[in-house]
Length: 151
Image 1 (cartoon, rainbow, N blue to C red):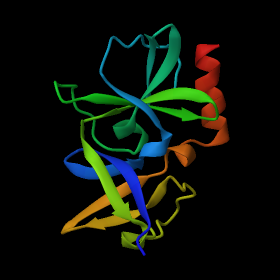
Image 2 (cartoon, rainbow, N blue to C red):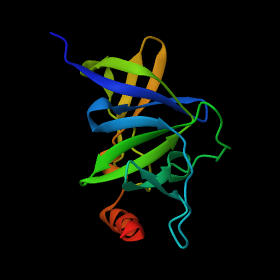
Image 3 (cartoon, one colour):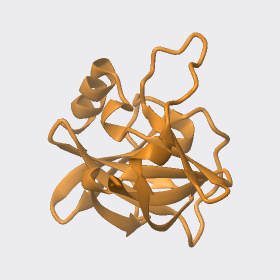
Image 4 (tube, helix red, strand yellow):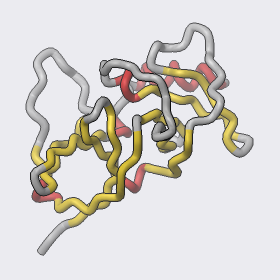
């Protein structure tokens, strides 16, 4: 018996990542982002999307990856974390993936890391895909900082 879960695949710095489709509200093209002074460096600013103010986070910066300029493939994945909509900028969105949970390995232990934002590493054919758990991407302090920016 297979236990399939659906994920949305995306690219960051040429690497394959995915996030559980159940935490995604929508995927949009990048729109005009208003910077917020004194915000954490990974927060790019806010957008007004259908009369809702949404903070936008650079997933590259949050994951300590090199930053690139946006292009025509750049997308924003809108998710809900603690009943707060947050957008994540990614290089491109590829496809919806059906991954058997038996093909997801636990992430290797990272020294000096107390972050648990990685759900696992999926083996899809010959590819390895890092699955990000966006619900655990931020500490409670970081969520409070982000919420304070838009209140």
